[in-house]
Image (tube, rainbow, N blue to C red; front, side, top):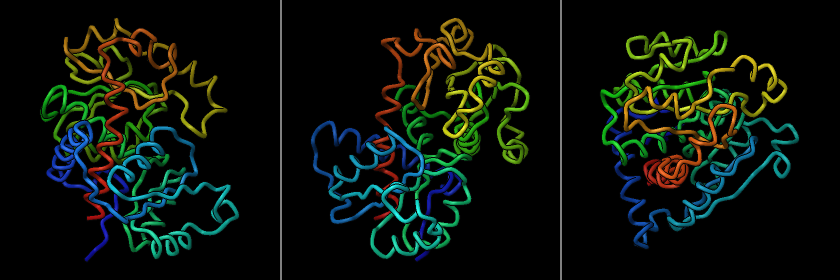
Length: 300
């Protein structure tokens, strides 16, 4: 049987994506009702972190515990990766000892190399190019609050980064339109845009992007590894903050999402983040439930 990996959303079919979201909702309800669901009993997940994280580590670790399994945290400081061992060798060794490998790293080719050399599922928990696990959580949140996203318009405001690239993949799989507002020079991957030009549109102002939108999403202007660009990016992204005023130009029931951590006063206003009706915290929680559905899908 061929090993299934999850490196981008395109490793799923549209139906598998929807099935995972439905299963995530079921697992969320089971957890809320304290219904035991030790579906991964005696299974072990290796968690390889080359980029720091709060939500990713806690959600995967808690998810494995809740499903009866366990996890092992590995950073460059406490593994041979930090001393130059090739990722291919690490994958070969880990896959003989654990049941799945989760990787949060920089270059996307690193996780591709690990998947090529692993006999167990490899999960992309973030690379510089894609963040598919976050899209599982975002889409679960939309389905819970608004129903199926098919036919809706989604707006991405800001950097055409890994999140934006994954939103493009989600648009193709779940059949929604995506309007991206970004400054010149900060577009998402051109090949992705070209491959999905029938449903992806790039504009230069947030105001144009949000018209008729059911979901407005953003991310920090400078991601991990781009800290030295912070000052330039703050200048280039001036006018790209998501505010209450901007949200009034979307649909009246439009949702706002942010993968967190958020910088209030930069890419999003404090008013939006601290709104008592925000779904941002549902979105963060859903990392747990969506990833539990993913782990079950890949490991059972």
